[in-house]
Image (cartoon, rainbow, N blue to C red; front, side, top):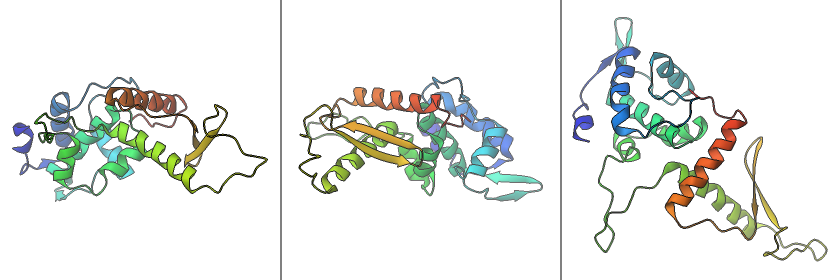
Length: 210
């Protein structure tokens, strides 16, 4: 943690320097990438790609023909790779990274000590992929509450296995949740489910895999 924070004043001249520094730190601050379609460390090409997609902030300036990057850009690269390791799609990663301060990016990397519970035990940081999944399920619950009552002819008991709720996540992607489904309270089970969902999405070509 200390090693990364000591780089706050360092500048990187050109995409190669920034990519090399991030590649050096990835193994220390990012879980191992399980997908062969995603590069384990960033390179110049991925830096340019992330910049084009808006995941990386514009350079701080120019030195000759080279762009100048700083600590914020380094954190953004590490966070992108961390969230990719958690199987989040590029679209969601952009939402999480865009506009975040250096302090917020450090928190996404879990650089800070997790808060203590009332009993004194350390609480593990929340997994971003799990939070994403929970947000989809929360949307489903909210829509069920807001939906108008069913007619007598269409009424199906909530506990019936045939009753399903449809959530449109984005154009072309729907989530169908059975009414009696309950999300596990176990954090490992939630992360496993999040990884399974992201894996299914990737198989259908929704992840650019950069």
